[in-house]
Length: 140
Image: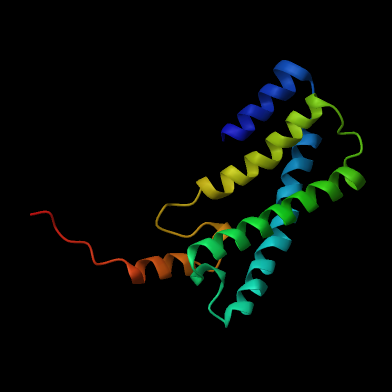
């Protein structure tokens, strides 16, 4: 919701940038996730079928972070080169970033904390975490 309010403020009140730039930013995030999620699933097959989420923390963080940055920056490059040639300068760039970041934030914040977010589609990191945690005890 905050992203839409920010987009409205940037569009109407401050700079007069259209919703199409905001939508292109949101589209960029969707395109990056279309590649990123299957890529992480494929990279998980390299670890003996356990999945990236069950790797030790440092290799998992490196692989997940690097694949996310490659996919997001690659999508941003392709969209800005081919679909959004008019998005140049800081005013349209601010609107474009509000669309990208707004969708990223709302896609992860809109899910209840007890369920995996779309970015963790398999949910294996949560099941791995739960299996390693001791059962909760009453404080009485």
